[in-house]
Image (cartoon, rainbow, N blue to C red):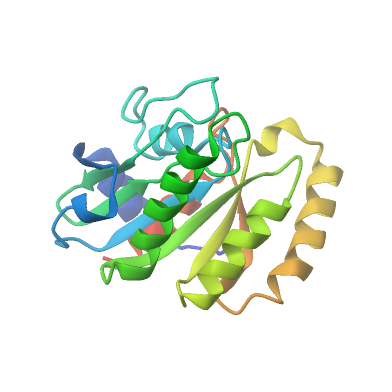
Length: 209
């Protein structure tokens, strides 16, 4: 994972300790907010832990809604971080128990946003560290590559794996990342429950100010 100085980590902590408020929900490509702040989007399979990670980053319990039911988030949710950045919680993809029409609507919204948002700096692509990349993740990575949208892979739920299993998954996944030109080479491992990797991820996001 990237290394940061204590000063960088403290600056990031202060940013995320400040105000962070929901300000827009978009359920269609023609309903996006004005492009005012640099944006970092969080994407991933349904129930991968996007909302939990946003809550952990901001040290809040209910900023982003969490649910045990995959597919709960059905719109792009925008959060104003200290009037400096915007965090964007994207609808989860790859959930089978919704209609094909609904899946297509969600996909159209996600990819219209990715392709057309000049304020988007990069995407945090969340992957369950226990299971690694699935076909649907690879499909999204291909689309991000084609759209020339930079992205960082973030392993969630790292506390649910042994250290050796996690290391193996990082090694295997790292080889795959080499084939994707828009991907950053490092994988950030996190746990919303234990806080592992959270301060590093805050610093990564804070760098774009």
